[in-house]
Image 1 (cartoon, helix red, strand yellow):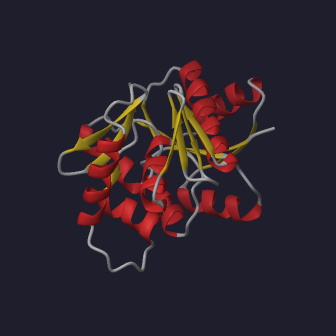
Image 2: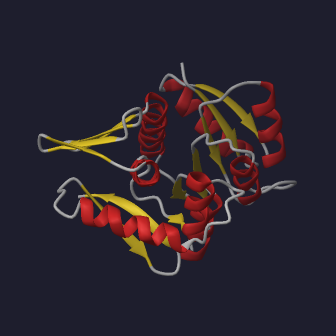
Length: 223
């Protein structure tokens, strides 16, 4: 049974989410702010977090930044009343995986939770499928249309990371930190070079495309 952690300071809303998720077969823990969420993660394992942004003590942005800086890649679905594009942009840049605006359709919330959990499971299995394209971590191989292509390690890791979260925007610095390492002295322009090579390799691929988000970074979109 998957375990979901809800960080939401609105008690009624937290209870509603909890009721819906339990009804759909999830185990649920509820807390009222980011600090309590971190404490709950220290006490027991959870598979996914649903987090508000505006919370006392520690808000959702700070919660996710703290998780990502510590190397914790637990999926985070943000549900918030902050509906401006800049708020959404800041959320994704801080490391959130999906974003919903209140009021939410709880049935859609359950669908998004399931989608995020499937992505995380694929990451753990080290195998990813998009349409007819299959990416195998252990062999650094991308298979599509009956052809197999072995990629250089950094190119494969870059593609695999973005393809694991289609639609999610990654900044150049995020990709540098995760693929080259936090202590790397390599310039972020290296990311652009690798993205260019990947585009050349997969320009005929009909399952996905790599999109440049001007002034932000890159994302993979399903075709």
